[in-house]
Every structure is written in C-alpha cells, then in structure tokens.
Image (cartoon, rainbow, N blue to C red; front, side):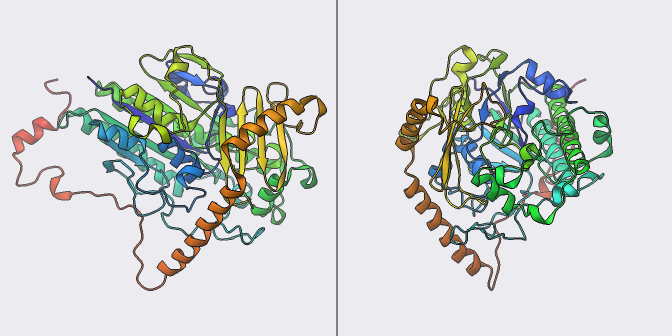
Length: 502
C-alpha cells in the first residue's frame, strides 16, 4: 500500500479555549485558520497531563503518565516504550523531529531516525520535585511570577532563537525530502516552544494586539483563601507573595502571549509554504502539549485541570476525516493510535497495554462514549491528582483534597463545585466509581515517591566528578554537505535541484 506522508505541528502551552472551532476570530492567525478550514477540529481536546514532559511522553506513546512513568519534567522516558515514531518507522517511514520534545534520559530519539535540533530544556534529573518536602520551592527552576511582571517586547530571546531554528530546519528538511533521494514515506514532527512563557514577543506581532479586547481575563483574580487547595499550592509554588501583579502586567502578558500565537502562525506558514512549493502532500496535525491559565482566577501557566491549563487545540487534516467540528471530549493520548490508523500501521502487538483510541471514526461522524482521563503528579502537588472528563462533567480526585465536580455546559469557567450538592450525588458516585476502577491513588503515590527518591540519588551522584550530559547534539556531517571531492559536481547540482527542468 502507499502510505501517506505526515506533518505534525506541536506547540507549547497553547490554551485550547482560544480554539473553540479553530483559532478564535480575533486572533491574527491566517495560516492556522486556513488549516482549520480543511481539518477535523476537536473543540474539547485535553492533555494527558498539564506539564511539558509528561504531556509529551503521553502524546507520543498513547499512555497516561502512570504508565509511562514520566510523572514530571525530570522523569525518564524509558527507551522500551513504543511511540508513534517507533510504530511508523517499523512500518517503513522515515521519522524526523525538529524542535522540542523534552525527553529526559539517555534516549533522546524515541523512535525518531533523525533529530534536527537539540532540545530547549535539560535532559537530566535536575528538575525533580520531592514529595518528602511538601511546600518546598526549588527556586532555580520553579516557575515564578517574573514571567508576568517582565512581559513585553524583544526582537530576540532564548525562545525566539530556538523557534526560528526549529522552523528553518523543518523547512530545509522538507526541501531535502522533495529531492526524492529516499523513497520511503515520511513523518516530520515540528515542535515549537512558543507561546510558553516568558511572555516576550517581537514588535511586529505585539503591535497586532494594541486594541485587543481580550487583554484581561474573563474571571478576575480571586483571594487566596477562595481557591481550592491545589490552586493554593500552585500559588505557593509560583512564589506569588513576592510579586505585585497589576492589571498592566496582566495586559502585557496576555498581549505578548497572543502575539506569540501570531509569531507561530508565521513560522507554521513558512513550513507549509515549503510543503506546497515542493508539491508534496501530507496529513497535517496541529496540537499543543497543554494550555496556560493566562491570569484566569489569578492563575498562570499550567499544572491544574482547569480548562485553560488542560484543554488544548487539536486539528487533523487527513483523507477520510471530514472537515468540521467535533465536540466529544478527546485526549492527546489518542494521537498515537490515530496516526497509526491513518497510516495503516498496526499496533496489535501492544494492543492489550494501550489506552488511547483512534480519532479517525470521530472524523467520520461517530460518537465518543468513553471518558477522557488526566493525571498530574509534579511540582505544586503533594500527591497525585486525577481527573475524568465525561460528557459535560469534569470530576477531579486527590487523596489530599475534596472532590471537584463541574458541569462545563452550565459553568464553563468552573466556578461552582457540585461535588457536595445533593442533586448531583448520583453523578459523583458514578464518576468516583469510574475513577476508582482506573486508579489506585495510594499505589500511584508510592510509585511517584519511589521515582523521585531514586532520581535525587542518581542526579546528585552524576553531577560529581566527570559529567557526561544526555543533551542531544545534532549531527551535521560537513563532509556530506554541499560540494565535496568524492562527489560529481554535475550529478550533485542536478540531484539537489527541485523542481528539475523549470
């Protein structure tokens, strides 16, 4: 069979509520709007875990963090867990990554045959939380509110430099693929770090939102005492007491965030232009690893199951999936089986141990009945939190906290916890039973604590004496680039040109 090429765009910390049916009308995102028009659009798509490394490992493998054991941003993603890159490569694809995937551990490929850039974040165990020390802030790597108070304009930053390179390398790879030296189908993953904080944007994009009507959140900041216990832990972890957040800080942060969506739109447009100019066809997928609260309720960044943090955009343009809006809740763990389904690749060998479901039937009019599950066991938590999105309901459990139940149809901002309401005890009982059938919270907690304790020992040991980091070093073979003396110049110039003869 002829297998389709696949082009995946992943972004970082993009709030899915801004994509109710593709990008919100007021966002300056012409390329994403063009993609949306040809895509199956999933309005209620959720991350498996609202943090970078856990969310990305789940996206790649189709497994929740309790199965990948990637609980936080410093937990190893082990090399024996198959990812969509493994499944596709095994079936004959060339698999390539340009950009971020936040792999922790010595395996920095996880099925990718080629990686064009290094990662933006460290690959070691240095960012390990410690449940043995509840309330401890690890100051040198924990988020703080400086991203908000420092928001503004810059023409270059750490993250802009990175994403410029991601787009450039992806574009060059598409040109190289067009030359046809490798006849295998390809899967290229292009993974950006924006619009992740710090909230810093180029003037060109900042100016697009000067008169934006959305620079203040719909739900303003609440008093600390009015927040649920986990939200209070997030405030403490983010060192909120050390900062005085003004409305101007909020406006500038949100303006820069929206500006960086437009920056990403331009970068995605560059890659798409190369695809079209080289006359290549591909399935297209656009997704984020998790969202950003953007000041709603006073919360920023992620680390919770509220919609701004946990809901992500997801759009798929593929033959056999009709353009249009799907409102059934789905998960990023569904992407791995979806890609395999679209490529005609079997996951049968590991089927008993997979949890994601193919989304292809939903793009053909089917309905989704099973609940969507989420987990969180990283910084700002003192014990694992779990969540089910089931129809209109969102139900959250943690051994330390009261249950939460929200009716998202009636209460989209999640302001009224119905878990103790007498009229909803049947729903609570049903969802609690579903959660207990899926999770043993005591065993989950013990797994996380064991992992953290082991990593603290290993990290401290490996940083003494000789240091051999796991950070990925992109391979560039200078002797195989451009013109060298083992090449025939005439053949080289002809083979490197595409299209030929025009």
